Image (cartoon, rainbow, N blue to C red; front, side, top):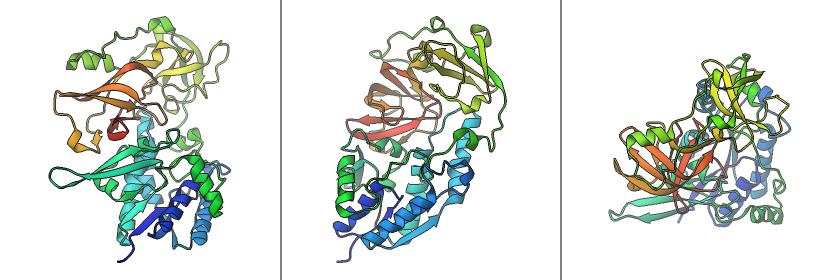
Length: 398
């Protein structure tokens, strides 16, 4: 019986390195592929995550494990599907999540298709998440995307937009391990990446200077910084336990918008599209006892509104609406019918502890109402909903 062939997305980091090692140890026919996704080094902080160093480390890992290795250039696909998406979202005053889109569009689409063209049975990545499969009543295979064992590193959120076919074709070799166990395996085996720092930047690119990156297409333009007093904001009444109608859902999920006359001018900035809800760095305004946080941006008039302190009421909302057409159910069999609701757990950013919530399916789309107030709900980011440890669906925050 021939070995199952697996193409591993070797990033040059410890997680994908150990993934390749574990797969070979289990008897798979393993091939390592490194994705080059970006050419413009002028906006990359070269000491953080240079692609050339990563590519070299990936090659050394392949040599150590005695597996075939290739570098594939996906720069055009990355620009068209990820970079252009980022620019478009920031231009609209929304905050994109390129890592989630990279997984959906590059790793689990372009990369997966390349692997399948090489007659691979599976692809593998170094994500900290798990997969289970079962047969439903019709005899069809259903795949479940589960949180990783290491809750401090769980990366299921980043895969919230993949589908059943993509999930069927992927293996997560380290999903059942903790980070310290992964590093120990790497050290024991003698992998060059054993002590390498984790990448903190964009998917397979590295850390970028966001203002420099955005300024390639979004030109700096001076605008006003307006401070809003905390007492102007009134939090909505508790509505978690009620079965809300469409009007109430629209009201409770509506984003608070401000006017210049409601606050005072305290400074200037170089472009509202460079800022996101909840941001505190880059404001360069002093004279306050607590840090200032962005609570709203007005892209059309190039104004940002700020509040003082992390507990400013302008940062908090009780509900959100999912952008129409952006919702994806990994488990389509669990999708709630029109005018129904479901108790779920939700996160709106990576590493956020899961929050108790209710998801509604209404005529205008899906709404999520939280048990507790949420800070910095941001348009363009993703909300992912879970049942227990299983991620079942997600959508873009409107």
